[in-house]
Amino acid sequence: MQPTIIITGASRGLGAATARQLAQLGANLVLNARSERLLTALAHEINEQGGQALAVAGDVSQPAVCDALVAAALETFGGVDTLINNAAVLEPIASIAETDVRAWRRHIDINLIGPYLLTRAALPSLRERHGRVINVSSGAAVSVLAGWSAYCASKAALNQLSASVALEEPDVTSLAVRPGKVDTDMQAVLRQAGATGMASADHRRFVQHFEKGELLPPERPAAALAALALAAPHDWSGQFISWNDPQVQMLVQSRIKD
Image (tube, rainbow, N blue to C red; front, side, top):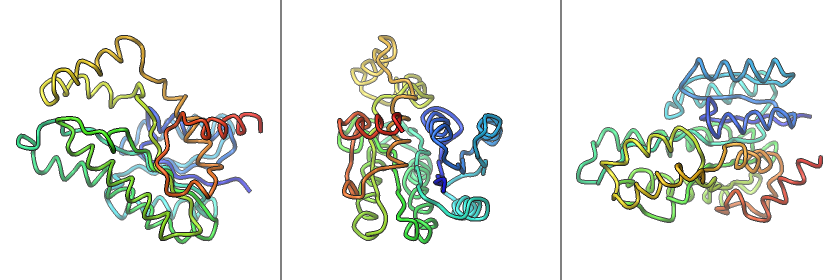
């Protein structure tokens, strides 16, 4: 039986790269993002290449959208084996004193409430199938930067949400994964909006990562996310791990060989 995986934030960047790799590995996919046009195009591409993908556009901070994602997986593929909670935003980038309260709250709704809602909706199927929850976290969860209060807080809380699932759900494997500095639209936002909201030295450092070609192509951490979605061992549950940890890369290599 082919596993069924829900991926949020799947229309571009890391989410899209992960979807393509999982499709090649034979997974059934339920793809989500707010951008319906890009999401539909990705699902069409995967289906044209012999994969199985559904596009369910919408905002994961809304309970009805999360319920619809799970319902689509149940109706079309019979269940949910893994969630990849990847949808996230970086903004607002500003000091706490200068942030807009609505923007800060909106950030938490997407980066934290969304994964909570989707995990909660999928738990019955995840329990039944001894499934996995893969939460895409960040080094910002453990390393604070000025101007990133919302992002650092949301990712730290996401790590704790992931650990809570591991503690409360013995039949579910739950991980938070650090994907590294990836060449995505979020990095472009950082280079533009960060100039006024971050410490100048921090902003310059991120710009230099881009200028020196040091950002990861999405396909590299995507391979780690795909391998973890399919085969993360249960005894890793509750961990915050990096995409390039040796144990993760061994898992990636085993998927390639298979």
